[in-house]
Image (cartoon, rainbow, N blue to C red; front, side):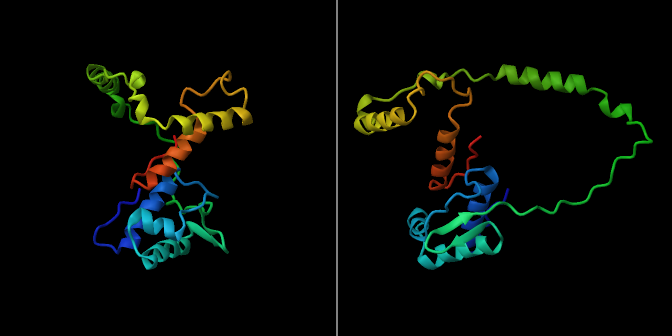
Length: 181
């Protein structure tokens, strides 16, 4: 991950933020970047800074500009990995490096069990007045028209992948970099 450096120009700090979002999967190849005006609003920056940010990411190969459409995330270029040497197969591993591994793993597991999370957020809810009831009703009706079996279909235990992706993208406006996973 790229950590923004406060001594860098603002456009480079924002570039680090969006690079991290691409690495985390919040922005996927083919996704549209926020417009220049959107970047100006979200980050309270000038048009010049928003343009520098987008051009900087484009010059690094993270974005591509499409005429009259804006900037889009590119497929990552093949990273150049450091070359590693193949392990020598004629030498057996030193068994001393594995001494005590069972005790260390057991200790780790038992410490985790001592500090179990006891707050069940599955039953948390707000006052009904805080929800946009009519908008939720209209959204549910639109989804049911497109996917009538959605209420009776099995879903992933990890939740809806599309919703996770939308939440990860919306987190960018708050300065967070979340992975859809």
